[in-house]
Each structure stands twice: as C-alpha cells, then as structure tokens.
Amino acid sequence: MKARVTVTLKNGVLDPQGKAIEGALKSLGVEGIANVRQGKVFDIEVDTPDKAQAEASLKAACEKLLANTVIENYRVEIA
Amino acid sequence: MNSAVIVFPGSNREGDVVRALKQAGSQVQKVWHAETELPAGTDLVVLPGGFSYGDYLRCGAIAGRATVMDAVRAHAARGGLVLGICNGFQILCESGLLPGILMRNANLKFICHRQFLRVERNDTAFTRAYKQGQAIDVCVAHGEGNYTADEETLRRLEGEGLVAFRYSNGHGHVTADANRNGSMNSIAGIYSDKLNVLGMMPHPENLIEDLVGGTDGRGLFESLVTSFAKAA
Image 1 (tube, one colour):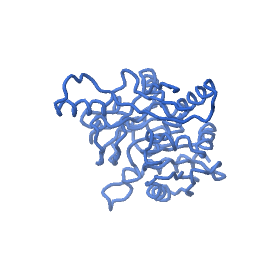
Image 2: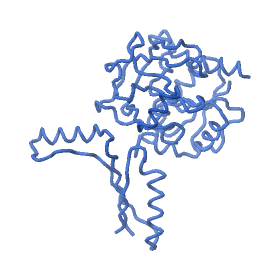
Image 3: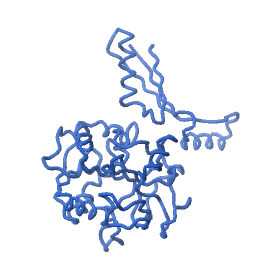
Image 4: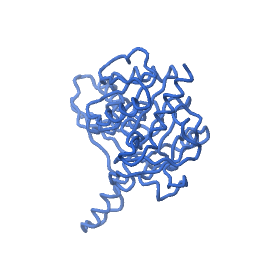
C-alpha cells in the first residue's frame, strides 16, 4: 500500500525559505504569486494490507519523527 | 567531575569540547550514540556541535531519537547535568529535553563570527564563574539557530528565568543588530526547569586559548567543574 505524508509549517510560523522562494519567483517574472510556504512530502510504502493499521503506523511515524509538532502540521493520505 | 561527550555520525566539535573540559579539570570519555548506558559515575553529559546525520529531516531530529538519548533523558531526570552546544542544542530541543526549536536563520545565511552574549544569571552550575549581565566574547557558527517557541513557552522561559544567554553587543546591551539569526527575544541559550540542562547555539569551547584570540569560554567549563567540586 502506498501513502503520502505531507508536513507543512503551522500558520503563524515564519518561513524564511518560503519567503526567499517567493522573492525568487517574483524576480523571475512569474506572475500572480502571492505567498509561498515550503513543506516536505514523504512517499511511503506501507507493509500491511490493513488500512486502519497503516493509518495508525503513519500517524505514529509523524508524531515520533517526521513532523516536529511545535511548528509543523502533518497530513496522511493512503492511496 | 566525570564528563561524557556523546558522538553521533556527523558530530565534529567533540574534540574541542573534550579539550575545554580537560583544561578545566574534568575527566572525559567519548560515548558512541549506539550505547544504551552512560559510563558509570557520569556527572555531566555533553552533546557537541556538528551536523549529526547530515542535518537530514530537521537539524538534530534523528540524533534526538538515538539509543543513547534514553540514557541522557534518564540522567537529566535524576538531576544530572547536560550541556548541548550548537547541534547539541538542536538535539536537546528535538529530544524533548528543552522546549522550542531552532529554525533556519531569519536571513537564510550560515553565520560564522565572533559574538557577545549577555549572561542572564550567574547562579547556575554553568555560569558561576561569570558575573550577571557580563558580556562574554565567544563564537557562533550555524545555519539553523533561530530560536522559536510558542507564546506560552516563551512567557514561561522568561517568567521562570530560564533564559541563559542572549545575543548582545560588547557592553551587554541586547540589541536588534546583535541578534543575527532572528531568535525570539534574542535567545542564545536556555535552561530546563530545574536548571540542570543547558542548550546554547554559540561555542564557548572555541574561546579557551589566548592563542586564538580569547578565553571567555573557559568560565563555562570552570563553572561546571567548580560547582561539581562544591557539591561533592
């Protein structure tokens, strides 16, 4: 089973990298860009056919390592 | 005093901190991250600077979950002393021993320069050799030193006197110019609730010899050895 975990900065947490990317896009002349926030995507293969168990494992992975919940939110999607 | 310096893959400042500890009069052992126990009789654990695990995922994230960290957490829970410098501070935050996180520097640049710090209090095991409000001349070298915490945590750190050092000018004045990485409240280092765990971004171990231009860093290691001699 394949899954995708997306980790993003919480609202209100300053994102200097996102700001720099936003500035670079503007300087490249890409129009219509209002705001950029940078995050991370993890493509994960899960070793179980049981969707509920996969969800539980992925949630544990996020809480224990993939996200720092002081500043980040995470989202789990199972294909 | 017996010190244990923890070495992770990618640590690179362990040699300097071993030297600073020995100079102050401590016995020192290096301990590999896969160990499950600290050497018997360990008084102080040091997490040195460097780039553990190549800073993969987040700085200190993987080292913060290494096997040896369970032993370090147990040591801290017993009231044992723990010092984390630079990457060591990032590891302490990621391991839950200290609150908050070190984010990318606000100006996105790796900063590497001499830096004054104001000593916020001199009644802890780490700072007895300094004066309160003293500006000490040390170094910084990091890309992720921008201390960030939620409002409640920040209020608690300030209210309970848990800020150890702030970025300042040479007169001990905390100015916006001196805060080159954008840390909240100019925080350069913080203590745990019981004042036995200290995490700091700057490198006191760099400034322990006149030959390299200063000795202000010695006070931190001498404080530790002296306060331990008193306690024992």
